[in-house]
Length: 314
Image 1 (cartoon, rainbow, N blue to C red):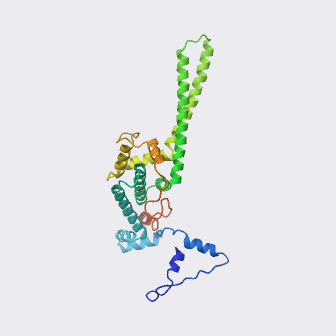
Image 2: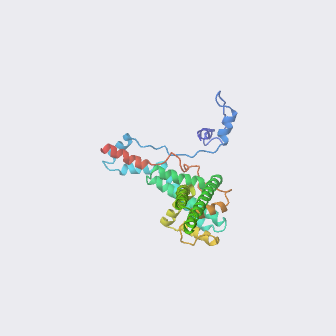
Image 3: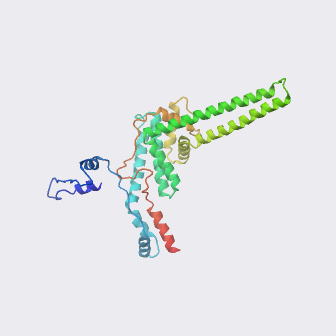
């Protein structure tokens, strides 16, 4: 970005219709470095506004003890403009998604709607001063949904965990069935031997129950399960009902889906992910002037300003 900014100033403004920029090599940077700089993707422009104690004290004094002057300054920062533009982009993309009914398969359309809603929730989490763990969780989901390879990877992992759980449950059912048959049969053996066999089998069942519980935790704590929980919360709390309508349309198109109105199950979500085309997964918003999800460059300017004022008051 710095290189293109300097090169863009070549020529006299208002006098020349073209300008020339000469890139000279150094002992540390050669032609390959210059090519990489000129052809690589531009990094997002991120707000560098950072409130300080001196600034907070000055603004409170100018506001005669009120925070209106400080709030007005923060509202004019580039970071606030970034968030407002991103919010508008999300709203525009959601409207286009609602109008575009024929371009995508139902599964891909639902995943796109989910990705946009999660980006909107990520923006709200940053603005609302949510915990870093929540912001990181939402950012990772947006990152995975925007990348077909990552989405395919988490889908395969969930399928593997689900298969292990089904195998462990099947083994447990077999052991419990064997115990029931042993208790129902009249075997001509010493009571001590029968009791010992039953105790050994019951010990195996307890061990297997622990294995099933472990597999269930791994499935429930997995990425797909977490994404399904967040999607259900978003469907429940959304005001426009866009995500719910998209899911309803998908379920109507899929005869094997759950009844409309039932919460989205992790296995159901994984089925949609496996069915959907993942070759065209991409960020759905313009990233050239907006920091990507998960970036450490979050705009918490107003929260920082309030924190500084509280310290000064104390």
